[in-house]
Amino acid sequence: MEHQSYAYGKNHWTLEPDLPHVLSRFWKGWRAHETELQRFGALAGGEAYRVADHVDKEARPVLVMHDLNGNRIDRVRLSPAQESLNRQLAAINRAPYQGGSWHQHFAQGFLLADPGLYCIQTITNATVYAIHKYAPQFAAWKEDLLNGQAFGATWMTEVQGGSDLGANRVRAVPDGAVWRLYGDKYFSSGAGLTDYAIVSARPQGAPPGPKGVALFLVPRLNRQGELNYRVRRLKDKLATRAVPSGEVDFDHTEAHLIGKAEEGIYYILETLTLSRLANAVGALGLARKAQLEALLRAQHRTAFGKKLEEHPLIRRDLTDLSVRIAGGLALTFRAVAAWEEAWTETPPYSPRYHYARLLAHLAKARTAEHGTYCTQLGMELFGGVGFVEDFAIARLAREALITPIWEGPANVQALDTLEVLFRKGAAEPFAEEFLPRLEAIGSEEARLAHSALQGTLARLQNLSPEEAQWQAKDALRTLADAATVALLYDLGSERHDRLAALYARHFLQKEEYPAWAMREKEVWGLVGVAV
Image (tube, rainbow, N blue to C red):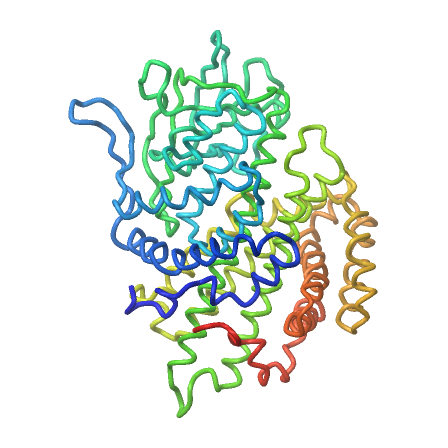
């Protein structure tokens, strides 16, 4: 891969201009883990980067449906390189469950970035999460998942429902000490790899709609050691090929109820919030890799008699990448900090938990937009060869396309934002956190963000429900962007003050980036890090 990528073989932690500042702001103990992040940065820029590309181009998972004796097994065959890497990556899930911090998990997720590889760990993490909080009797399975001896999955999607979980039809029937599931899931990430899945199903006699959906833990093998569900087929996807996704059939499938049946929808939404944060850091990690590829090419490639990075328009585009990624990181790790404070709560939730949900919605939706834009711009900066699969940048652009869709597209995030702002009361703490902060900063750009935030909240409250929904996506972006400006200023460096001003001018005032930025390599380049 060294002949197809500028960023391959480099430590992606040591190249990182923003993450140390963000961690210093939100994770006070991060320096005790700097050596671990250094090691993981080498893995992310080396073996993981290479294996992800290898799997995508040459070694997709293959569904093996029968063993030598004709028994149905429905297991995927993976590249040995991916098998080994999957076990190594399992370590990123351990910290929160062993007295550590969610910041460590999400920092490593950002450095890894690859949606296929990280998805395997994310859905495994969600399975661990559900067991840890609501099904502690399965602690032995939890340990297998954390040690890389098993993998988990979150199977919620049905063909008729998609994001509408209330439309789910998979049935759950009690059978003594267990339950039996009947039906099918249409998009099941981890199919054929999964050992323990959390699955949404409607218990017999439960009411219609989302409140009637419960959450179940489904092992691959039942208590008799027999195959417990069947994988109908794997999906042929545009990207994220490292995670096998397929269709799963349940017929008399043995399942274990997680927690209380009537609280199942809340457990599902908790795991969705967790996965949305993973989606956000994954989108930004892809954006960073695209930026590294484009920036290093701009330093090596000559056009029209000078290096690409010497051209004003190239510097303008590199500035755009820097502003978006730094802003997205600041917003996302503020959401991670809120999750860290609230994740142990159980229903009924406190206002603190709903505030964490709000920040997760804002971060997920906005970073997905930044991530797809940045990877496409990075590809454009390569010119025609960027569209050729020989170069790493092409795959990054394909991979990023899933991030606006996974865990609820922008429309769902916007509707959920309205719900948590006004029905759950998160608008008040949001205003209380960011309006005084922006006012205290006092710059023209901070005043711009203050006005945008205040005006958007006021306008939403005065609209009819239908009009509020019509404007919800634009409002989400404005609220996310105004908060991002404050959070960039909070990072406390001169560079991030400049990035905050650029972010406000471009995304809130809708202006082109000012020309002074082209002369500031600290803004658009990688000053002070080893390239």
